[in-house]
Image (cartoon, rainbow over the protein chains, first blue to last red):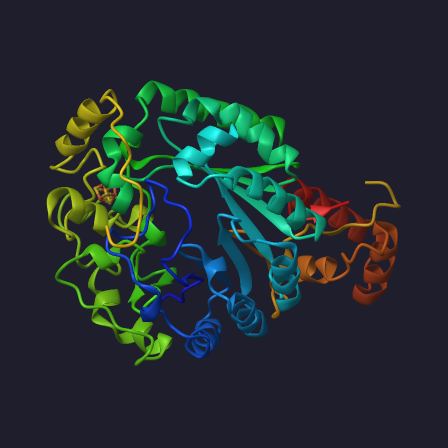
Length: 359
Length: 85
Ligand code: SF4
């Protein structure tokens, strides 16, 4: 059995922003249902013992947890590389130095665009862009590593060259250009978010050019959108192979969208150890490896490369989590993707359904 | 590589506690035994020339050979963003 290398710790679903492409599920966990500091401390040590190297502290907005520095410190003591994934809203000088003192290794700040008013409108939060700029300055000033994460979609895809400039200007060592993937809230807003294929292809060449030009200065990672790819990505590096997601309420998931799969029951770290869950849990075993695969994945030469794509996407689009991911052009259900593109890439943009707790 | 370059790990990059891999944002780089020994010296205070001299002694190897290894590793790691010079 492989060892997991990453733990995605969703500390909370609470968040001051309301991005319409949020990857959180439509049904969000409320504050009262969140794991406490003590349980996180135990789980982080169990993760390190299991071979995990990186912990990604995410949400929601992890800064809304007042015990964040304690959690970072627990991860640091366990020997984990700690990555804070944040909107930067609430990242004051005091909190940042507290987090640095606790052993934080890296900060990833998301941006919604370049021009403040437009970026704030997408995030559904006034003044956010200004806070992000200031927080980025503090992170660099503290000597911490900074990644800028820019989520790309129809409304901001033409601004990519300026986004790359901004990442450099802010002193980031790494830029993640991540096109929206249509899960959770993003699927609900697909008709307003999907860029045209032409715009996507232009963005891809902007990234390629910038990668060469900025090599050694800025690392750029490009996460291409599933819908415009011919083959799916290995979702989470393969189900139950590399990553464990812990939802705010303690459920251990093989993928952050897995809570949307209706027939599955997920174990909770409140009552079971992480290694027991990783090794013995039925949910983790269910789609691990290639045994579960139907045709055309079964026997395909990419079966152990992309592991059949995303189970949650297969379920969301065709109602069957055990089917080949329909984004694969070999899938018998691929027509559903072509039809979605034909319908949505040129659809008029409707007002977004902004993410919020309580639907 | 000039003799005076003093490589240090880039912000956000650190050696895992077991010493066998470099960890960075969303990145893991496994190091072979020679690379492990060299990377341990990258603390921003030692010159590449000094690193080569001391490792040559430690491994009982010609300094020019070790120096070539150090230079190649520095170049590779810097281009991938793991090192600052
Ligand atoms: S058929 Fe399955 S394994 Fe083959 S490329 Fe498509 S999704 Fe991947």
